[in-house]
Structure formats: C-alpha cells, structure tokens
Length: 484
RNA sequence: GCACCGUUCGUCUAGGGGUUAGGACACCGCUCUUUCACAGCGGUAACACGGGUUCAAUUCCCGUACGGUGUACCA
Image (cartoon, rainbow, N blue to C red):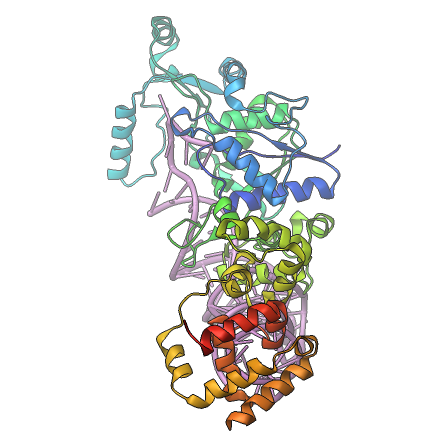
C-alpha cells in the first residue's frame, strides 16, 4: 500500500515555524517513500478563522519548498480538502456512531459543564464528563431524549468511551503507549452548532482520505487514545501514528513569540534563505546519524526516516540558524545572489548596481555577514556615492596628525591605473606613501580606509579599491585632501 | 491534581553493556592578517539522581527528581 500523509493546519494565523517542521517531516516522509502528501484545512472552529490564513500558509510552505500532491489549492480525488466544505459528512458519520451505540446525545449547557468541573475540582478528582450525572441520553432516557430532539433543543454528540478497557497503540517515535479507559473523557464529537470537533473530523477524514501515517506534533499524543477509540467505534483500521517532538523556547516551554520570531514569514522577511531554514529545522529533532550538517531538500528526502526522529523536544537555537544562513550565503552562486539583491539596491537608489559588479561585491564581503541584506549595510560605500558622515573618533584620527594627510596626499598622487591592477603595486604604493610621511604602513591603511569608505572595518582594502575604481577613489581622496 | 511523554556539553546532536563519550553552534586562547572577518590549530564543557540486572552500565529494568504536553462545544 502506498504511503499517504497529510499536513492539516487550522487557518487561525500565519504559518508557525513548528508547523513548518511538521509539514516538512510529512513531506519528506512522503517523498522518501514515493507516496502522496496532502494538505487538508481544518477550519471547524468558525470563531478562530482568519481571513487569508490559508493562502498565507500555503505560500509560506511553498517558499520553503514544501508542496502538496492533493489539497484545496491543487485538487485531488479525495476532496474537498477543506473541512467546512465537508460539513454534512461529519454529521452523517457522527450519527452512525449514535446508531451503533458508541456515541450519545447530551444536552448540558456550558454553565452546567463549568459547574460540574468546579465540583470535581473541589472534590480533588480529574475533570471529566460525568456520564451518569449529567443531562444526556442515558440519564434522561430514550423518550425524553427523543422529545428534546424533536423540540429542537441544543445538543451535542459525545463519544461513549469504554470505561473498563485499556487503549493501546504503537507510536513509531515513542513506542507502545497504553492508557486506561477511565482516564479518557467522553469527547464531544459534534458541537451544538453542528460542526464536528477536531477529533471526529480528523478521524473521519484520515480514514476517507486513506491516510496511512499520521505525523503530527507531540501535543496530540494525549488525545490519540480518543482517536483510537473512534477508529474502533467505526470499525476502521487506524493509521500508523508518529508524534514528533516540540520546538521549544530557551526556557523549554512550547515555542512561542516573546523569545523571537516564530512565523515562517518573519524568517523570510529577515532574509533567511529557505534552504537554510529548512536545513536547520529538519535537524531540530531529527538526525540521520552522521556528522554532516548540510542537507539539500533532496538529501533530506533520501535520508529521512521516522525512526530517527528524536523523542525529546528541541530548543530552537536562533544563533545556530544565523550561522547556517551565513554558510548558505557563502555557498550560493554570486550571480544569483546579485539578482536577489537587486530590488533592494534599486529601492535604496544606489547608482553602482550593475549585476556583475554587485556579484563581485558579494564575493568580497559575504565572508563577514550572515544575511544577503547585510551586504548592503556592510558595503554601502561600494554601491553609493554619498557616504555617511565620519564618526567623531574617525575625524579626530584623520585631522590629529599632519603626517596622515601627507601620506594620503602622496598615495593619491601615486594612484594610477596600474596600481589597481596589482596587489603588490598597491602595497608598494602604500608603503612608499607612508615612508614619505615618516609613518608606518599600518598607520596609513586605517586612515586610508576611513577616507575611502568612511568605515573602520571592511573587506580587503586592495580589493575594495579595485572595485571602487580609479575615479571614485580619486574623488574620495580629493574630498578629504581639499574639502570644499 | 490526574494522565501521557521526555532527560548525553549552555544549545542542536552522535553513540551505545567494556569509548580518552564524537561532531556542530556559542564561548575562550593561539596562528595568519593593515582592520574586521574568514580559515587553521587548540581549549573549557555532558551521560539528572537512586536502586537493581551484569564480570562490567551513560547504554537494559524499576523507582525518584526535574521538565514538557494534555486535561475546552480550540486545534
């Protein structure tokens, strides 16, 4: 039987980085096995629906390289893939359970339920629907239930959990899990508004869509026994479960904002390469057992297995992600990067942005930064002609010693095209100019860098001068030597 | 509270009955260097605790501690 997996987000907001990883694992598993990866939208909670969320999540996923074979945006033979469009189906299946005695009607108001929980809490027992004391099909009797239903009384349908039976299932990542039936709540399956809860919709859809492996976050582990009971109630074979560990904040709680970005689009906006983010996130909780840290999507697909997913949650290390992004910045093709950077340079209004020139600049400075956009900040003096004002310390350094002006003047006079051709010639000129002014070469280079770039740190000075070209160098030197 | 899940350097992890417990990020030092960085070299740093089983346990088992998740007419 061929593998079919699904990623099933709720359209309640932007795509979370943890969701990206869950989606990625589903995707990798499907591709690894030549199976099918499905996107299903779980929008059964109308109150939390956010306009545009579905589109945003799909595009974030696509940005990261996670695509689907079936889904609301691409179609497929198991649709519709949006639960709100499958409304009637859930009621139909819910009623089958009522008919076969594995689910029942309940009429309690939320106030009554709150009161029940308060009583239980006060008595020190676990909050759980009290089937024998609340207002439901069993306590009210068939006639009264019928009457209330005919009257149109608000009601829900609850799962009748077998009380004296252990529920067990085998999780690919966690092994055998056994839960006593008396611990499991009589979960609501159909809400009073007629919509299904996650539990019902999820099980029905996974079955109808012939999902073979449910790969989802660990937070679902505690409710999996309910799902197992549902499969049993329907007489269906449950899929294989794999609960992946959570992504964590530095304090080890479930990853959330407050500690940093958590939305995929935030990472995209910050300038992370999708390849770097995917690489990094894949390795949070999974490892193929090698020391290699770098994996393309293809590499991940060929080496991914659920068995090698870790059990423990992983703290999300932003610092290491930055490092990884920098590594991708160094490896990427400079021409491509120049193309990617182009819009930003245009936006800034820089004059020197000819693609092959930009590529040269990128090659020169990318060792020193982690983001492509940092190149703009780091090398603004290579793209623009208007330099930011010198710092006070820099001005003091340049004006504090006449010898520096003498040396720079000497350097300017010696700056001819051939010097730009040859690193040794450049060095020789600097040496000569320094000696002429009676200072060491090292004492000249820093002022020279300041005059040419208005920066104290930067890339190799010869290469910088070379990229600047004779004309720009001369005009910057002149601006220093004879300020207008 | 109850249920479930988890626990190897600060972090991500490899490993697995007998190892100098390996790698990466971060951090520190050295080298290179006109600066910063890169690179290279080196360093600090971990098997939560207690019992078993065993000739031998970080590795298997059981407890404990700690942490996380869940406990909704949310997913």
